[in-house]
Amino acid sequence: MSVLDQHGIPVQRMRDAMLRQPTAAALAAAAAVLALAVVCGANPWTAAALTAAAFAGARVALRTAAAERIVAGHRASSLTDGRHGTDLSWHSIIDALPDAAVALSGTGRVLRSSRAARDLFTALRNGQTLDLATRNPDLLGAVEQALATRTAATVQTLERVPVERRLSATLSPLQSGTADIESPALLLVFRDISQEERLAQMRADFIANASHELRTPLTSLRGFIETLQGQARDDPEARNKFLDIMSTQAGRMTRLLDDLLSLSRLEMRAHVAPQGEVEINALVREVVDLLQPIAREVGVAMTFAAEPAECVVRGDRDELVQVFQNLVQNAIKYGGRDGHVDVMVTRTSGTGRARDRVIIEVRDDGPGIAEAHLPRLTERFYRVDVAASRDKGGTGLGLAIVKHVLNRHGGQLRITSTLGAGSTFAVVLDLKG
Image (cartoon, rainbow, N blue to C red):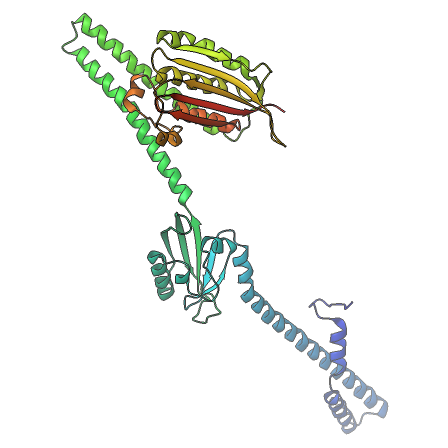
């Protein structure tokens, strides 16, 4: 193992190099001192001592100079090696980036790309131009301008292959970039903003829908208040009629705000798994008994069939009550007068590592729902029949709440329906292991 000095140079290398230095200069210096001593009349012993000292001093000086030259050469070599290492290290940097990154030369050819970039542009290849990987004119035009003007830019593009997605591309010129095909001149970093745009659109739609739902009853209330303050002020019959309508509209707003608050709470707790234990037979029976008077008012016959075995799930009791209340109320309201609503709890055995499950079905014999509407029923404010839903006090948020609760509980909502034959909403939950 070689020993290094404080400069990082092997000591043996230093020693060998210094010993190989020529001694001619040291001998010449000693001879000069000897001649001077003789001319000055020094005795032979003094002259000899002066000559030996001169020779030794010259040797030390020469060795020191040699060592300094070696150190300087080693430092220069280290700097050169470091510079080349830096030039090569950008490859590793590109490879390590989690985002889609592409380094281009001054001629616009691909020098290096990250794995994410190759996944994004499957035709991307080193040594080829970028237009072989994408034909987007906005991106290619921005790249051309950035290479020509050496200015940074950001451009948004819409890629349709292999799937449609919106990308934000940041173009950053590199100071070391030249026209050399091996030197990086421009760095492109891509970010997929498709999900962000979808979420922004969902928020905008939600705000628009919520505003519309609130504006309708508020407009109605304002109109009735103005009427009561005016011509109907002294008309008891009209006053009572308008007050009843105002109470209905106020109740509608209250239900809407309650549902909005429920959704907000559910979204805040979406990542927190429920810790309670709930026996499904008892919970669903409680919901059915609670809603029996409402069903009788509209002539709906409601039955409940429990699972003989105990069905315990891990969940939040209040949230699960809300799920089954929404489903049973919908079956009563939209199933039609003088109809039937059947609520059934059944247990199924899991296969392999799958847990046993409990399935709670709510079935009505109403007009049914067209198949085209089924995928969107759990969207916020989505209604198959807007007017009918409002007339029956619906907010358009009930099934959205059901979906959020079941997502938090790791459950599923299965919807089947046939026009003219009714609908079935089935909740599937894992039983406690």
